[in-house]
Image (cartoon, rainbow, N blue to C red):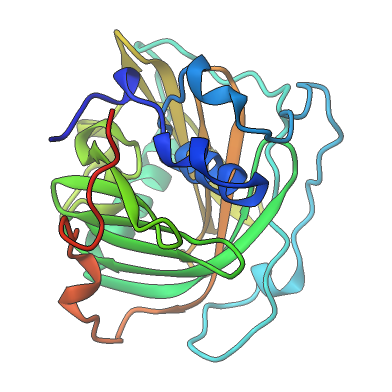
Amino acid sequence: MTKPLANRGIQTGLHTGLHAGVALLMAASMLCIVVPSSAQNVPVPKPAPKGRDVQLSASDGQRGPLTTGTTQPPEPVIPDPRRNVPASIFATFDANQKAQAARVSAYLSSLSTLVGNFVQVGPDGSKTRGEFYIQKPGKVRFEYDTPSPIEIIADGSAVAVRDRKLATQDIYPLSQTPLRYLLSDRIDLMRDTNVVSVTADDLYVSVTIEERQTLIGTSRLMLMLGAKDGQLKQWTVTDPQGYDTTVAVYNLDTTKKVDPGLFKIDFTVYPTSPG
């Protein structure tokens, strides 16, 4: 049974070793899933302090055009944790900002499938890699490279955080994760979301969406597209505690046919962990 994010921790992490516990909590951070204090007896790295050093440059691989060939993993651009993001729902934008947001909306709406690789950076700087598959609307699969046993699967209505080693999974509503905006069939960011920031420079166009939920708190999703090619480069999820998880994507392919079975949440081989 699907349960609200604020009412459940990722129980699988309580039964695994250090690596599996860390991977689960990093997966939860990517989806902005709130892990209660009962889950914190899993030995995990402490989030970096707010004033940590930040890397503001991008690798050549991130600056170049998207390709279906093999390229080196990009170095994710870590947002400055001291950044001041406007929180007013009455924020106003000039014509150029509205045009940039419309460009991002048009790009996201144009996608039907997207396949590629990712590099994920957690709040403490820990990196994991893997592959992802998107089939719009609402379907995604993230497979973390070994030794991580973690997979994240969305079937259009629910999200499963799965541990292949333990053959268990936890289920969350897709509607309660900010990544649903990436998976929407059609979207107008200015109309359909609470956009709080639109910025652009020579490398990136960045749009930040804020989401407020009574039980969970305020989370943010920052999408970054290439300023020249208009393609998705990375996103950053900021959880209600203010910690960032950044995912940079590369080797993107919008033409590859995706097996529908990749998005099936199996409740027989992978029963839901007890809450």
